Image (cartoon, rainbow, N blue to C red; front, side, top):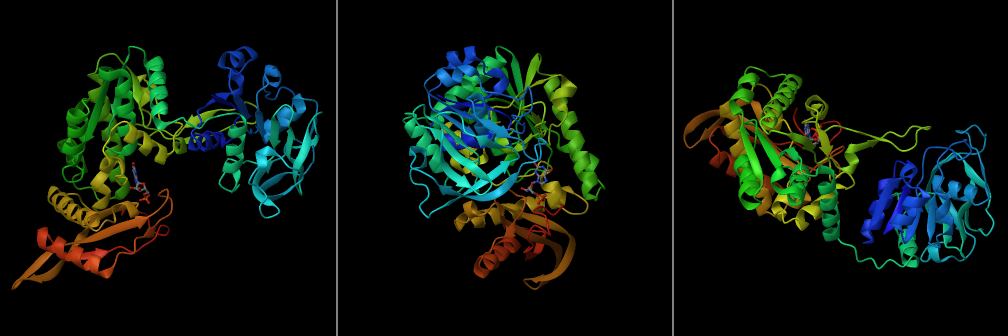
Length: 517
Ligand code: XMP
C-alpha cells in the first residue's frame, strides 16, 4: 500500500483520488496517528506527505515520524510535507508572511523551470517550463544534505528537489490539483519508481470498504434514509453487503415523487437486492400540511420538518439501532482546518436528516466520505446496481413541491407527474438523457385558453427545464432542436389531460436557479 500522511491540507483527498485513478491502493492517515510503531506495522511501500495549514517554523507543529527516514522507501513531500521533510532532514525553512517571517508568500499559478534530469519528472517540461499551482506562505531556504534542485519558480527557488540516492522527493507546489496540468504525470512517475503495479480496482475498494463497515458496526443495527438517489442507494447497497439484515432502510414517501418512483425504488431494493425497506407512505401528512401554502420557503420548511419527524418515528420502531447511514460524499465534507490544531473536518449534514444523529443519539456510518460522484457511480456498478439507476438525474429532497409554484394540489401533482414522464421519455428516446445534467417539467400556476378539436380549452401551462452543469452550482439551458421541442410539446398536450400549453425555460444559472423554487 501507499500511505498518505495528512498534515491537514484542503486537498489531501485529491492526492488519494489521483492515486486511485492510477489503480494504486492508498490510505490516508492523520499525522497524529502515524507513529514509528504504527508505521512499521503498516509497512507501506511508499509515503506521501501532504500539504497543511501550519508552519514548520512554529514550535510543536506537525512532523513525520522519524522512523520514516530510515525505512528505505520512496517519500514524496508536498508543500508543508516538503518543508517538514527538509527541516527534519537538516535543511531550513523560512517563515513567510503568514507565520510572521516576512518572506514571500505565493498563491496561485506559477511556472517552474527545469534545473536537472529527474525520474519523477519524466514527460514534464515539454515546453521549457510547466504550470503548477502554489499555495504557501513559508518556503525552504536551505536544502537538507543530499538534496539537489531540479526545478525553480520565481518565488520558490526550491520548487522541485530530491535526494535521488534515498528516493526522497519534495515539491513546493500541489501536483494533485487541476491547475497543475501535468500533476497526474508526476504521481504516475512516483508510483512507478516505487514499484506499484497499478492493479488495484474498484472491486478491491468494495472489499476494503465492506471490511471497514463491519469493523465499525460490529453486531449493531444500522438505519438509513433511502431516497432513491445515487448516493444513498450506493451507501445502502454497500452497507447491506457488509452487515446484511442489520441494516434497515426507511423510504419516506412524501407524495411528491415522480411517476412510479416509489414502486421502482422500493421494488428494486426490496425484491432485487433483498434489503429490508420500510415504505413510509406519508402522503396524507405531507399534502395535508402543505394545503393552502404557496410560499416557496414555507413549503421547504414544512417538508424538511415533517421529513425528520417521519424518519424518526419509523426509526424508533427499529429497536436497538445505533448507527445512521448517510451517503455523504467527499465534496460534502467541508474542510475546516485550524492553524494550530492540525487536520480536522466538520460535516455538512445531509439536508434531509440534518441534526438527526445528535437528536437520536446515533453514530454515523458514511462509507462514501472519501469518494467523488463519478467514483460512487463506479462503485454502484460494481455492487450490481443497474446502469439506468446509477445514471439518474439528481432529484431534490422536497420533490415535486418545488416544481409546482403556487398552491400544491393533488390534481396538479398528477398532471405534473404525467407531463414529466412524457418529457423524460422523449429525452431518453432521443438518446439525450446522459448529455443533460437534469431535466424536468414544472407546472405553472396559470391556466390559459386553447383550442382542441372544435372546442375551447382552459388548462394549465407547463415549462420544460433541461440544463447542462458539472456540479449544479452553475448551469446553462440545453440547446434542444426545435424539432425535438415541437414533438415533445405535441406529445404532452395530446397525452396529458390538463395541459394545453408547453414552454421551454431558457434561463441559465445564474441568474435563474435550476429548480423553479
Ligand atoms: P438550484 O435550484 O438551487 O438547484 O439551482 C441546484 C441543485 O440542487 C438540487 N436541489 C436540492 N436538492 N434538496 C436536495 O436534495 C433540496 O432542498 C434541493 N433544492 C435544490 C436541484 O435539484 C439541483 O440539482
